[in-house]
Length: 277
Image (cartoon, rainbow, N blue to C red; front, side, top):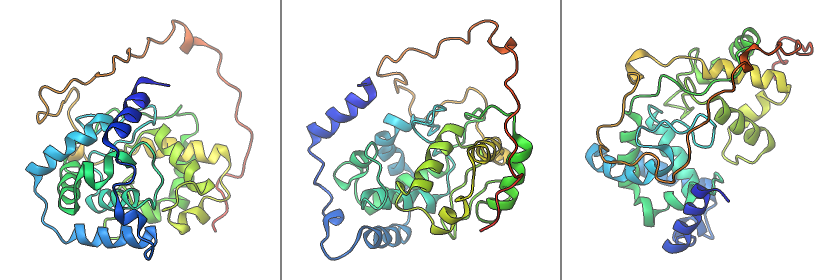
């Protein structure tokens, strides 16, 4: 077991939080309805950014002080995400309308707090600048990726991946490629219970090549300049934060000559774009 996973497991057992969300156990209302009611409650509140900064310390354990997550896809970049999207996903996770075993223990009211804390931390996260160096894919099929994105994704997620607040559709520009791949698989297989049924239907005909191409293209979409942090930026709200508390070693350098290897063969031919559904 990895050190981060062990730490999270220990955290859960020490806090005894597995049964602290009475709302998630409501015998009358289902998880989707519980999440909807909390979403509406939170959206009606006025957020307090200073309290949001304090609440965010719980989130920084995994998402890091900057909210940039991890390029390996273990944790998403949440900095700069649309506030209604953050609130909806938190409400869904707290009500168990979205399964997320790693995040659930940190999201429950006993740890994260009630509706006001959710409003505050969502507003705080939404105003954080995004990393200019998110994880991307191999970059060898971007023309197909753009074609698929324009045909299947732009209508909902926006021409530039900016998302839609009114429909709480997430902004996906600048998200880590491997996280996008992981969520795409979860949506297609039904493991992500709160997925939009329209998206499940839309991606049904995608081949592995379509998936990899469109998500690589998506990860390379650039958010507006005003939403990006400068290179080397660290969150001044956490000046004493130890960014490597688990002692995880840095990623080793790429072996010399690896980039000089012979190119991989051309991918097999597929229809240029999956049929619209």
